[in-house]
Length: 237
Image (cartoon, rainbow, N blue to C red; front, side, top):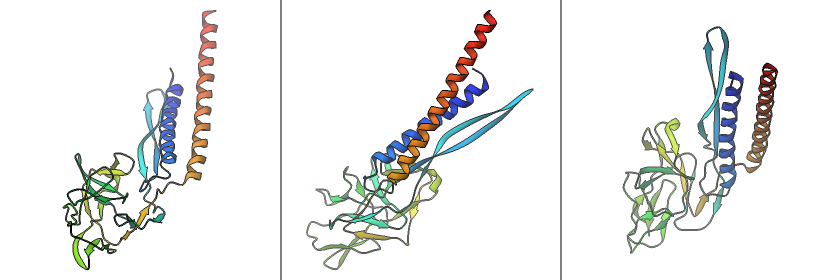
């Protein structure tokens, strides 16, 4: 295969990865706390001796949208939404993870946990605990949880120390390779949930664009393959 074929294949591979990302966004358009993801294309150019330079396209960098998702009022005591930047800090078996999904509940031990049973951490990095005799629970905008006016804990808000080192591990959780730090300036709303920030219309439009670009590249590969076949037939004759 010549340089043109390799260049086209790298482009096709990148478009296929972007199609998977776009499809995942559309599938999670209704997932609480989901962050839309995009793919960044780059170009690598190598100079060759006594030949034109070769350009290879890569699409290995994923970009996560931090745009605010829509807020829906649920009235749930342990439903929380973040208005502004920041993440909840979740304790998992693999380590601490960041998430915007605030649909929580109480475990049998009284810990505030996610739907998967992972504990939510407070501003100091300790699990948020609710005593069994606590009643009339309320949460202030700064995350302070109170029972009948008596402070119990403060739900922590954090942000990655390096936003570019944040890696998605599943639909709504992220690992911060550069560590996390406390975040201030955002509000926690009790009785609300933040929806996905995916724009379905733009994602469907992008899916069509990617599909057409992929089909165009495929036609080019087929035409180049036919050119090579005809050349070989000519040389054989």
